[in-house]
Length: 333
Image 1: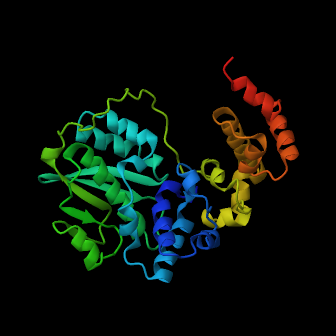
Image 2 (image 1 turned 60 degrees about the horizontal axis):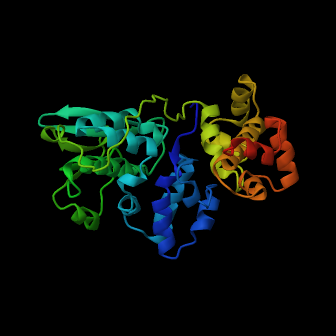
């Protein structure tokens, strides 16, 4: 495998919230699975999928929580999608156009998420799969999110009460009777080629009911990708800067490769793990200096430095100026 499957922190937050609200020790469980504990502050950062799935399954099993994936999915709304996806959907004139945009930009939610449309008689299936995750158990938790988020997109056009006739899971999983009662007019399928919900063909021409008029997004930037280990680490490391940084051996385990293979891949690009970590720290600090009024010492700690003097030297070594001077160059004159 070339990279590490990643998810946005936003999609782990509702699982952690359910676990936290029953009084369970959420921070210690996150730490056990090498996940950052300050999730709410990092909603748009990325996390490794495998430890996140293990955290969710352990939370469900240890606390006896029924259908944790379903409970977490009920806490998500359209506003929890990435800004990029919300923007292009808000600009879409019809549901069909929005679904096409959703398929195009799905990687802004999970780096290995692939979405597509399949026509079947008088309806269209909105299909999704997490590619490169074969052999990972308990993906039904993620598949709840994969199915519920498209429901919120359809509701932008069909109204807030719309529900699909079918919710299908790629995993061999059957929702509890209590969960099924929440969707009394929906059938559930399992063991499918992909996870999917269905939408009537007649709905595809529905106009956008959002009152907000958005500017046409003209950029065509590529979405995040977890297909190469270097790109993966650049996305993932910012989530860990102010907490315990994963060791090289832990990164190799997440990527399902040996430490030697990981180091060889980095070396082939002329990099070391320390190089990538230093770059992530600098980029995080530079962003905070440009976009916030945080004190220099706070920027240092948030970027993984315990010594402000060390931070100042490291920042100057990359940028050529001290952190305070860098911030001043970005201030309006």
